Length: 283
Image (cartoon, rainbow, N blue to C red; front, side, top):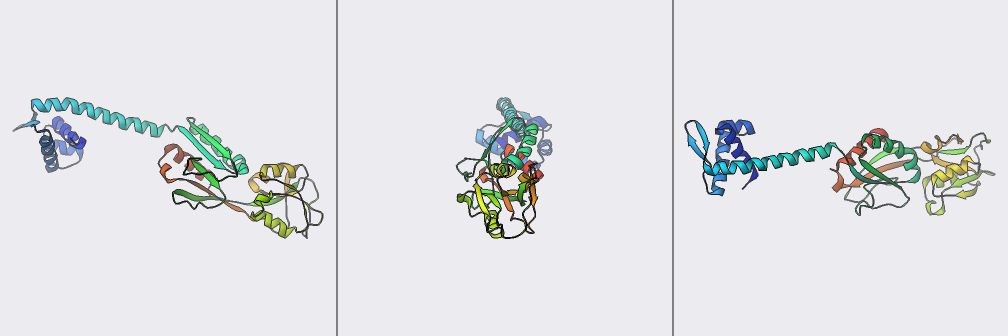
């Protein structure tokens, strides 16, 4: 039996005619008759007596009616339950981003999301490793390079400006070769980053005194007088002990991309979080 044929049967039993059934289901009278004949053929039993006043259930039809109504109630109950789950977003999401981006850009948005969706547990991993979406190491990944994996849905989220900073109140260096200046910069593993190359070009004779792969560590070192540091502006501008240095040229900024596996695109909690992140951050 086809469940859609049973829906036709129920409509005829309740309406008493093919026309009434067709109107209730938004179909046509010939379609109702054809579907009823298909159902009776599959059961090998007549379900209605055709009378001048309409369709009257046979004994077999009465038996089918009781079961079909129970099947209908189960189907409607399933629809209601799924609809309720879609409205009450819940579950677990794992996010991955760089340390400073997670702390200074994502965290305020995640706090807002938690208030709106208290039944979703969000885990934020701040790691320099590129976690795999295909292996479910993360559900949503934020990173500074475009995604090339064919199974990943991604978009550019925002462009982040960078600045050169010094401890507030210290004498600012003048444009030149950087002689006598002290620098806090990325560790050698990240020596190919654009801001590292920019520092070498704009202050070629400055001394590198500290290295770290953590932007928050660089900001703290700079704020304590260790030396100049190139930082993302959402981090540097928010650090009260720092002020920006103007050497006539700004460091190169970076684009941030967000990606998730295509199999996750209908996950309600993921869509809810992405919608909020894009609303608050995309530009």
